[in-house]
Length: 338
Image 1 (cartoon, one colour):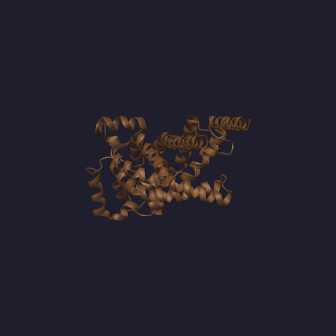
Image 2: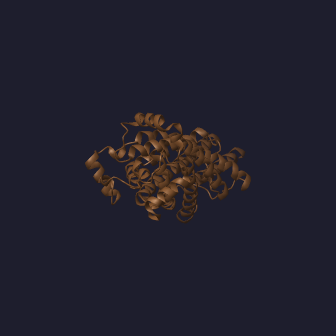
Image 3: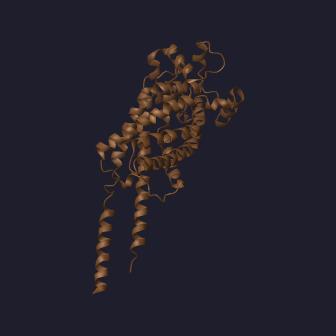
């Protein structure tokens, strides 16, 4: 009888655990953080995959965005819309022209996003333990995102400089290494970080708006935080659109610092190279007024919506997969087959 009783209890326990496993996530928000045993390398792998996909899928639109942010574009590089720009670039410059600079973007996006997500998860968890005793803290999320952005941009900024130089109309560089050598020889290594402070000034509020919008959308569409691809895609797209729109003025300044647009700077009698966020703001305003700060906003929003949706859906999938993988092993270890 005692043996039968033990078997009955074990069967009941297995049934309860199975029913819990059938629910995507429990009410304690288990899905919100990866299992504690997951290594930093796992975070980095998930982040690298998400980052590469985010930047590459919509790269042609990013190329158009860079050109549309030109303050004094060549008459042959003045576009009315993203579609018209892509069509004309392909027709006049070749089918692969919108992809120019993609190689350096992929090289930079992998390690940049690997560091970003790994740092974000680690700092968020550490601060949440202090602030909310392990619970979800908006303050911890914001601080973690800001710290992670500093690391991400330190890796990505040189790649952005090279990418945008190669994206511009009539770019003089034959390829990736020619661009790197020419910039280093003519402007010095510091040229790769000329827009770093501006990029941080842009990306920190971008990430703040981004995470706030994403969390607000999730609260409406997915309050129990189950794994639901549709809600992650919609929330990511909304977060990307809002954050891209409000930070476009800073992105225009960053593009000017990265490209050192010759025609625009010559018309302003700028000798040497333009440096500093304040100088960039002043130059943009003098060249085009307030409207110049929103050049390329349409292309920037069109680029960010799907790319951010891709990044979130890929990263959330990794979190879901790893959480379920951990549950499977815990169950098999706890209840081995007889």
